[in-house]
Length: 201
Figure 1: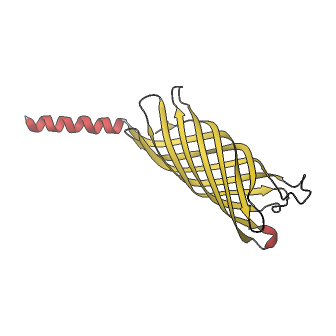
Figure 2: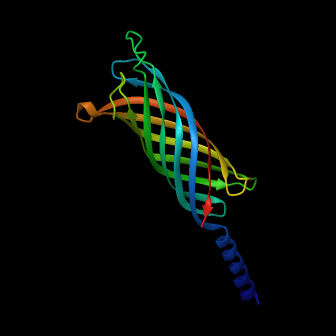
Figure 3: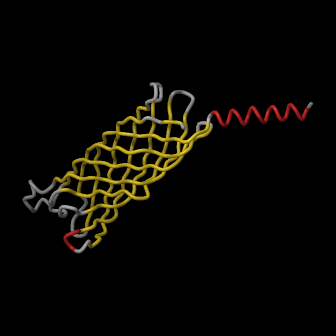
């Protein structure tokens, strides 16, 4: 009799686990805005700002509220920065950019219509579109990004997300100088408002 009870309990636990487990496919879109600081050889620390659209997807697995997997993002926006005050750079401190990010995330679905997650990109790259005093068209910033996010899941199918993203760039690739890589020290802190559709397959 005890064997049957143990087997029944195991079956209930197994079915309960399976009912809360599945592959996660989550398209996402958002709008981000933020500011930061940068330094480069020969100049003092100066300020920068950026804003633009982000879109991508998370692919992973979730079970018993826990979730984790990989994340891919593309972005497109406007990037502005201060230049040396000794030069007349009124028309050389803005550029559009397109970004690519690849990383991983982990999170948890809370029992109060909220989810929390953290992400880390192994690679964050911004390619500049336009010439400026910092570089030419096609130059690239590279580094990594840490994301802290919370989502409201009270709506059908959709998660409304608020993210705080911290990007750190350490390399500037100069395409006009045979792709010479220049060491930089740049940080950007960004708020992203967005939405995603977490499909549990």
